[in-house]
Length: 174
Image 1: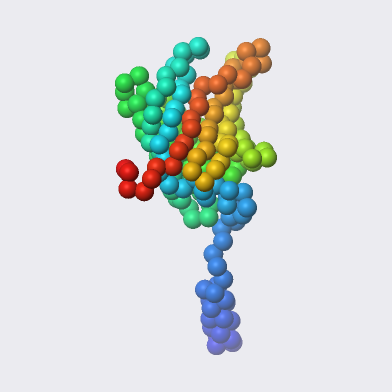
Image 2: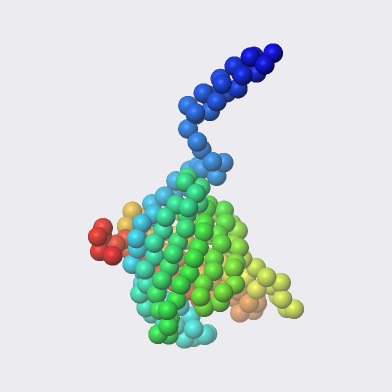
């Protein structure tokens, strides 16, 4: 009996070693994100307050953190003359975001809508819920764009609070 179990285990192990590892999140949606891997120069517009924006440049490094499953973005720049950092982990249905300006960890959920990855975060308040939407779109081999929209109330409508155009850096330029 013991030898039969050992043989069965050995056969299972051999099969497992031959099979290619594919995490459950791997699929065509994630394949669309693979082109984001790399080093990026970012033209960044950030809303300081309603009607007042700062235009600056930044750098982003995007790498897989879990192969075939999740990417990590490290974003560095300046905002009002001070260093600014942000860290994002994202896949095709959710994103975790934290930045040095706010410090709060935000969990966004969503997915692909046509050619746009749209994820949203919300928090209940005494009034209407506060909502933040992150869009990743116009994905091309050497560029893509992001836009963050804030909804404080339906009367105000969605307001652009951040826009960024990412352009791939040539190898060896950073």
